[in-house]
Image 1: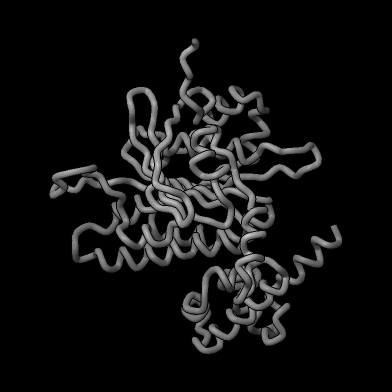
Image 2: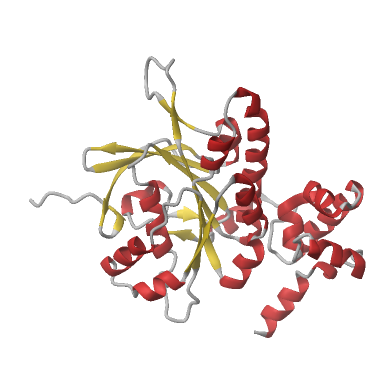
Length: 330
């Protein structure tokens, strides 16, 4: 407990010597509660929200980054590939509830990474989100602290009754399962951005290990219509996606973002569907997986990954949420 308190104090805004009382008050009034917030939101946000000069904002962000490196929260600016490899072997993963899907991800959804799931309606995106909210709570030993999930709902698709049914099907306490999921219902893209800016202290205070955004692009897509607004939409979406990347790395959480698809009328061969958000979303997602129907089952295809081959696996949806197809008895 004492170590946790010392670590918390080490993350306080005024733990940086150059931040005096006046600057601290100015930052905290603008929503910067710890040095993690400085790193996640960046110098531009600091300057715009506090009125601070950009040079000073950049300086404070760099000091905050160095402090997080010293505390071992983020990687140092220069590190050998050997140390990085050893660290990645210990990286936590969250089971999807399906052995096939876990195998596609080499063990489950990876922490410190942004995983994008896209596909047309009915392919299991939201069902996967609900299942992961249950799977993240499973403990390897009774002495472990239960990990929690934070669910940002932009399409009004989160259903607590589905959490109850999945928990019961997996022999878990449904009341405890519900208590370990924090839900934030979002109403517009500006609200979505505000939520993500304020999310850091909630993650730290509640031992959140999984952050779900269902869906990341939907509100931007509905509010910015036509080519005239495309540039502004992409800039705001770009900022939002990069904040997800920094949150995943700084807070050591797994980030899962669902995405919609759009048809490509000029496609003659191959799949006519492509994910929305363009290159902004494509380049910021660590892993990109495409879901589609296959009769009663679903297919998940690894489309983009820095370390996985492009391949497909089968999974299914049932009372347990996401699972594996039944094998015929011999």
